[in-house]
Length: 367
Image (tube, rainbow, N blue to C red):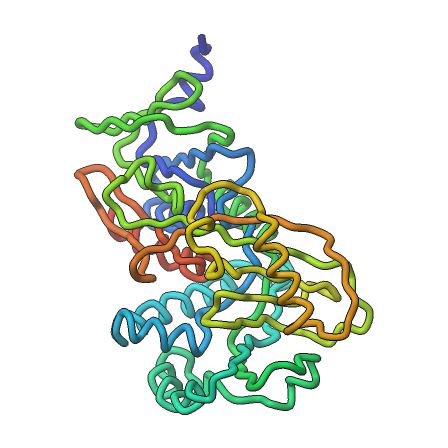
């Protein structure tokens, strides 16, 4: 049984409850509180820290590689693709407006893509023309063959450079957003799982603590874990497995790199290599919300490391982990109102770092 003090404070009625304290939940809360400072906002998170993909990704500050954007345009059309690229690009700019680069280890070292199919090179000019109004550059993507040897990527045929991208420390970004939330008097219940939702003239959120909290409005920012609440939305969990090497003497690689339409991604963290992806080798197994690594995919990533990234170099693995992304039939996020009092901002398609700041603004306009 809880005390009157707890019921009157931690479990009191709020104007808005957000489920999920990852990037989308934090940015949504910040956007709402800045637009409506008088509203009380509570974020409920089932883990002791934000998990999912926000603190388990590769720390890429990116808006899309050349081949990924071409593939998206063929699947979704150019209008939706450019809308998505704009959101990502603006989101990265917003991060830099809110947080100093050195506070989150943000480095604009450039984004690169290894391409082994010459056909993509014929489309660079056309894609650059479409992206000019977004990035302000005549050449967002440019062929840079000199850096293949400079980075030690001897087995790569072509290297495409994008000067607008870089890397950051995802954990430090989450911490800075939490600091901003506390500054705005946004409240939290960590280590608390939502069991059930009931909507009448209010929304009652039943918790794992055998208590409930009431709000006027509810927002789901649960990304890959949304199917527990919203069964009809097209959300497919996608586990991203990652490994990190021990320090490597004389490491030449610097920047963030994509390969195979973004299914592989790697970067340097100081003189270590972080490598993730490869789920296209075993899609079905990786459609899961289980935080595990598999021997098959980890071995595959190690082979990729040996053959593509670090040929003729010895390395040791320091860490292995996984994060859970949310995918769908297309890459556009699901941001909508689906009942009188409930909203969702989910399915960030593995680009949550860049998308979440703008998604938060969209939800703030809806409520």
